Amino acid sequence: MTLNRQDREYMSVGVSVASGCKRCFEVHVKEARVQGVAEDEIVQSMNIALGVRERAQAIMKEHGLSVLGRKLAQLVARTGEDEEGGEADAHPGTRIERLTAVACAFAVNCETSLERHQAEARTAGATDEEVQEAVRISRFIKGKADSLCCKRI
Image 1 (cartoon, one colour):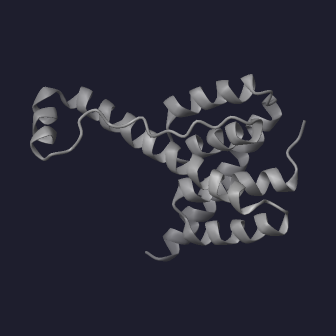
Image 2 (cartoon, rainbow, N blue to C red; image 1 turned 180 degrees about the vertical axis):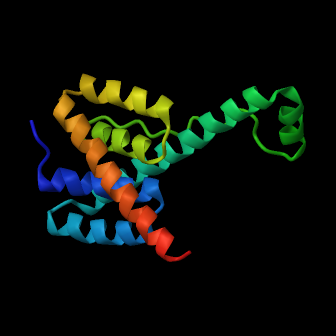
């Protein structure tokens, strides 16, 4: 099974959010609407991306604290931050939602989430070809986002 234009744009909206690229987001929301992606689906794609970003942040914080040790954990606790980090990851259910989570996890460079979402996507019936396509979409948008940011430097 291959992804259609509607699925690709649904996914591209999420990757744009995960990559933090406002311009990419605007372009892909416009194209998603042209391709018939409903407003609630656009919001769902955004929510998946935001959940993946938040979970990646929590995973990295936990990893950083474990590497740096107890002394830093105590410092973090004194600053009033939550040492645990929340389980903020969205829980996508459909095949395309799970593929979007794969693409978003790739966009934020979170290996832990990427492994989890790949397994969940395959459980939902996604093919290896679709998982690879999700990664290609993510890589392309990340590249565009990087290029746009570099022009500002």
